[in-house]
Image: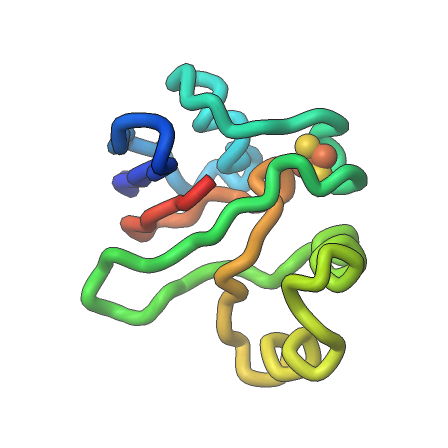
Length: 115
Ligand code: FES
């Protein structure tokens, strides 16, 4: 079970429980299920509307998961990551703080999601 806090300057912060480990529940699905107004359009990693900034609120390091191929392309197009940063994330196994909510699978860690 993970605690996911959604934060946006125009809305009250909301913390929800996520059932982690299903490998199918995306951050966007979690937001929609809890009526959190994260923007989205394509839901397929193509448009970038669901861009979010993710931070760990656990004491331990972020577990994260690798960016999907679609995220790598789109986050570069959006100017959030450059090729060097992507290469570093891939070689160091570090999670990216920029994610697409429709592509990010929720893991068993407590996170803060700024949208
Ligand atoms: S909704 Fe289009 S990239 Fe996520």
